[in-house]
Image: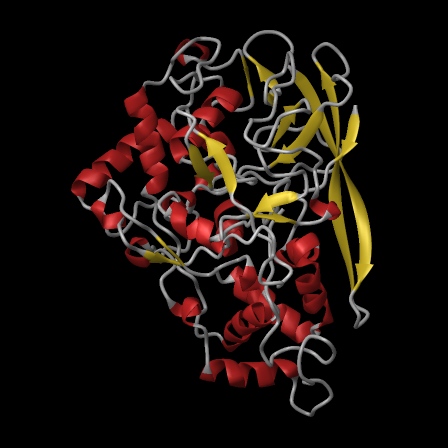
Length: 459
């Protein structure tokens, strides 16, 4: 069975400022002796956005720039929280064995196998078999908006590529299909999208099976997003585009065990409403470790206290600071990022509410996400609905820490399936609600585009 999968991210907003190119997007800044970037820089110094210079994670922020940038505990937590953080870290760094519950089918033997240095594995090489790190989500069609995707009989919700004994559940190979394009100024670019081939243990997968290639997101960041009040996320939603700005962010509603609607916020399609449930799903589907939330073949193999400590470990990770905040190019790029409308979805500022850890209460944070679902168009669609998110809808990906991926993991695989090899490629894949913002980016001069990229890479 061979499917071409399209894959995420979001951007949007109303073009409004005077740092734009000639045409429908703003005033004329073209054709003067002074370069566009020099003019943008001069204006940016006078009015740099506050969110560029503020600490990304408030008092939790770390200024570490190394392969350990995603690994440190929140800088402001006390001894009790640090001890619990260490307890959760011990579980996160455990390598499971068959004796401790691994398998019988699995994709990795521990959290750090996929989340290397709390980051992510890169996208597969062209023509390679899928190894550790990226996974393929699988389901059969028919689930409703408040139902989790239906498991594929005989395979579950993930395809496992390793087995404790015997043949693996599935063999998956990846080819990359390339798409050529050109900016209005004549600059060319080359994008890619994955073609995924799957052979199941018993042969071809059932007709109609829905597949989606995913790479693991970085671990530093989701913790504080856990504490953004539901009311703030709901207030930002505009599913019917009442304000007529072309952006229609929707809340992902998920029913908890008691049937109470909860706001989804974690995962590429906001498919988890808290980190305990997200962690339990990963343990069960990728490692084969059962919990009280997701019992596996071997029953409950990780207790509730350990699961809670694991979730706390993610909650209490420090957020990497933005860098190069006094660089004129980065300042100009930040203003352009706002001017062409990217902050319409990549909302710079959020806040935390009350938590079980006082040091994490009432923080002002800068993740650059609204935590809402947006239609990103057919280019990124994977054809697989998850709860209310259609195949083309994705949660706005946070930007904090993204510029450190190469430092931490030695690559820059972006978007949900790792297709983008750079910030520029990730931007160019934005369609749907973000189409006009992508068009505005493409209409900028090369200097201006480079400034926006420099800003994003500074996060």
